[in-house]
Amino acid sequence: MPPRTAKSGNFLHVSAKKHPFSGVFDLLRSHLAELDGFLKLQLTAFEPEIRDLASYCIDTSGKRIRPALVFLSGWQDPDTIQPELVRAAAVVELIHLATLVHDDIMDDADLRRSRRTAAREYGSAAAVLVGDALFAHALNLATQFPTTEVCAAVSESTRRVCAGEITQTLRRGSTTLTRADYNRIIELKTAELFRVSCFLGARLSGSEPAYTEAVSRFGRHLGIAYQIYDDLVDFFGEEKRTGKTLGTDLISGKLTLPLFVLMERLPKAEQEGLALEINGTRPAQLTHRLEQMNEFGVFRAVADAVDLELNEAEDAVAAWPTVAATPHLRSLAGLLRAQIAALRA
Image 1 (tube, rainbow, N blue to C red):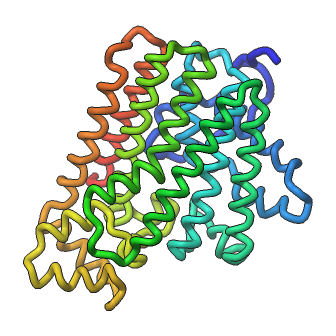
Image 2 (image 1 turned 135 degrees about the horizontal axis):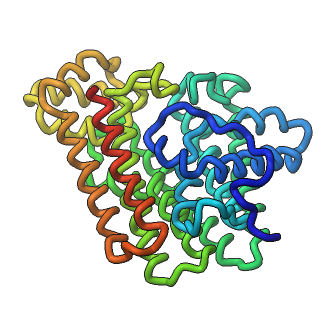
Image 3 (image 1 turned 60 degrees about the horizontal axis):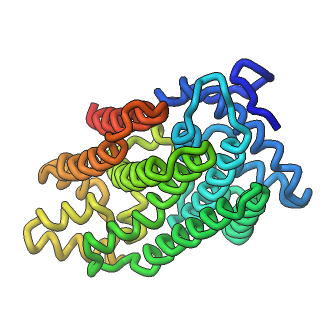
């Protein structure tokens, strides 16, 4: 099947909703529209009995960050859409969507993308199973490449993502979690899928091994930065703007970097009170803790941690300035920095 051109075909409308990587979506508009069309076609592979549930999860309003990384890591020119990259982008997006369905169950979240979560719409028992079905179909798509390398990479990454989620779940409510533990969890549950997205894009486009390794490291650091940013949004974001339930980390006993920094900066007596909220002994005091985060400069400290990871990401591909993908990948760091600034606007 030859590459399609961005100027051909009737593509689906791509949401104009602004999000952290909105600038990239102007560049990738046709690529992401092709992806959305491909994802919609996948619904026919699901059994009729669960097709509506799968459709509810495979919508076209998401940020599509991981697919964007696939396309940008394999970037050649704006008018060429490589079918193998569309398929790879669908694989990583389906895995991501499955994790969101499961995350919302564990977080007891009401909203995702400005509407009811699958768990609220269909019940937790059905939602966890449709998440499993999305995982299974992603792996089925991965087997359809002429090489087993894609399926091997995707299945390994899926296991690592699940390991991160399991570890975080088992450590909920624990105040003995260290920053090293936190870093390991987010490297597995978030950064791994960013990493494999970049790997697949570069590998399937025929990039040299050294560059493929470099963009993989870029994806890992970008993924860590993005998760820290997302943890910051949980306290400093606006539910109407983000389209998802906020404040769930403290309520569910999930110790994230904003809470680590706050715990370190609070007086001893206040630390003990916060620990009781994290372990669920007493109700979370979200408003009070946000006031303390503002008082003790938590936002700036966490934003600096994001910036450090973004610097590492940019450095990973700095030695390849003439490769077509490099400037587009590096621009993502600036876009995420802009989004951090927007939280304080």
